[in-house]
Length: 78
Picture (cartoon, rainbow, N blue to C red):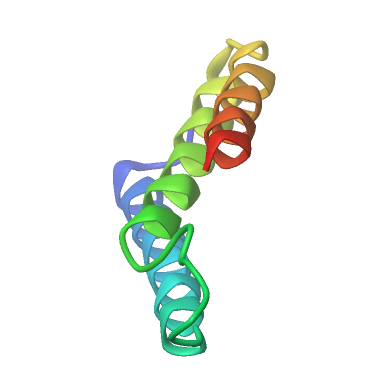
């Protein structure tokens, strides 16, 4: 298991990347099309992926496909 500072740094980077993708997506949206995900949803999706991969490496490998199925279900409903 990596040290806590490395885990916190990697989690922060995942959140920042998700935020930047969400901001870009919100900025490039046209006025007449609906927005599925923006600057709040993409960081949550990125953090979900990061945490599920971290927990999968710690000994629960079934959590990664479950998290992927959950995020895919939310995207399909949206």
